[in-house]
Length: 592
Image (cartoon, rainbow, N blue to C red; front, side):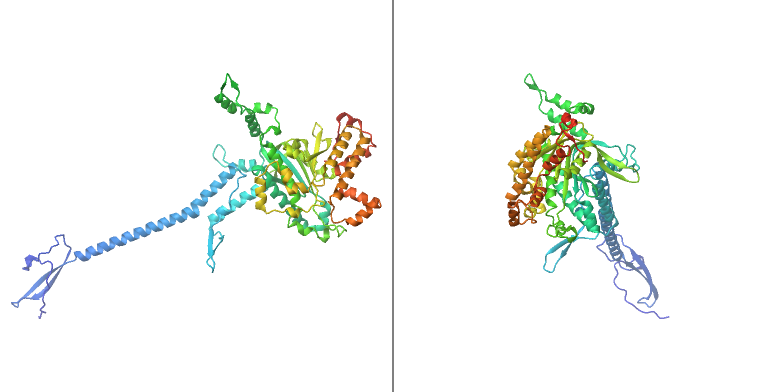
């Protein structure tokens, strides 16, 4: 047997029992070795074995360090991944769900609160070739974001459909009851008494518009509604102006003052804000306690009038201006302009353009706010005599030949500057109201006025509404233009005729009212307040020739509607006031 002679390399460690030398190593740490026996031939030629002890500590330490690093790396990677997942979960799941709960809870407590849609839709930024940035809405990709956006849309639709009157219905059905369980949806909830200014806005010649425009009548009515609703929302104090109901060609606008208990409490506090002084000492604490200890029943017993509320003049002025601005707005709206020269609305007279007719009725007082209907269909609305009075005022505009009528209850709330512009046209008894009601008008007229000259962008209009002051009745161009046909001479003659009429002296009343009617017509001619249907040269020649047809047409189109109404009523009764008129000093309002 032949063995290979080899040189054993120097080893870090050799077992002394094998006769080898012990090599001193500076590393005194415990070593991890691997023992291997190799057959060798010694110098004497004898066969022997050499046991090799290989130190693997370095390799194993390196392997341990590498394993530790790998474990640390995977732990860091796992933690980073968990943080990313947690961030995404919080961003796309938890936060949207919390926002949903916030929206529902907030909507339950205040259904009229606005929710910003822009803050709910994520944005992305596009960089154009020229380096400019263009922000646009990013399509909502995640289900939670879609759910959040959908809930927001639903709340907005509920707010638009139910309005102020439906807020109690929404709130009572969204909030939790005392047992902390969700209530079953119940749209039929008790109503509540509120105080508000009610306004009805009607579109004239509705039957003719339906026949002439057919399907396009929806475009016309929605354009008019857009103008009316925007002006009411703009001029309503503290966002109190809203549209409650669209009833075909009639809109019910509500300027809500507040719930009866809250309004009475504020009025009571305003009356008692000045503390009574006794022995030159002011008992402030006692007065404060009395403010909170007063009972609702005591408030109900108080003789309460809306005109006593602090700030009510500003509130009522803005409500009236909202309606008058809507009247001016429909005659200069760029979308309604397309109907001016529409051949379908020429009505056989191509020379005379079409302008929508609007009638407005206002009243102020209390009403019941709540739901009317059943579980199959519910309308949130207002019920009460003041709502009916506003409707009667709007309907009576046609009888009086005016575009604006309001009740005495509303007129009493106006500022002194506004009251000077409202004309007392008649006093009537109205069904459901015990006292005779003076009726007032604001002489708004489109004839001879170009409202396009006073057009303003929405931002400027918002600033004007925000900076309201009573001086606006003498400075605003819309309000001045629509009333420029009214002169001092006319007002004096009409006041004489009206007073004679109410006193029962009808013969003299007719003469005075006719003079007032002729005065308004003459003022329109003198001030060139005629529309394009009249040629001034032909008109002057016709008047010089005493053309009765032209004179009759002028009086009919440019005369005073209330004067004609009172004259017709007197002539209908053959100039003899009935006994009921003499006893009550007024007539019954026959038109609703």
